[in-house]
Length: 114
Length: 113
Image 1: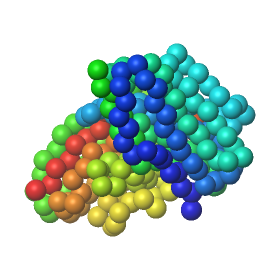
Image 2: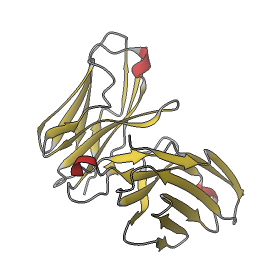
Image 3: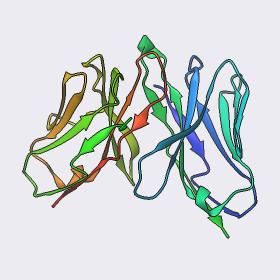
């Protein structure tokens, strides 16, 4: 069935460094890839997304890249700050049946140390 | 926009009791999703509705779990009887059917003792 794998499961960086989280998906027909940030005790919040008709999208310090051939997509955070510390989830839209179900990765716990 | 609303925010109950979780989606959204989150299993999709109709309930753990959406602005997730292994945070999310962005509610933290 459809599957999304996410790596690494934990990531520790120094403030100001960059962080990269990578995901792979199994359904080659998937066409929408969102990223969610979940702070401790809070809800997952959509921070950026990308659709299959583009290869890269940026929003200030956050960027997402998509390689459809390899079925990879990645989240890049530059100039990390302590408030970036959270769990990040990638997801891919399931295409089967034409419905709008998302398949989530297992999450990456990012720690940014001052 | 009030966002997705869930109640209660916290629920503590004893094993064997019935638990009902409630969700109000964002006004105008016509897709609604119920998720369960635990440390061990991560974020799991339990069931989702399009235009109030259940589309995929393959994630519902067992017959003790049931969900309804009687109208476009209200959904319930019921567990009867509850068990300690049901302890988790339950999230509701909503979206437009033809859009892809899902917006999550604040969640209900359920503890079954």
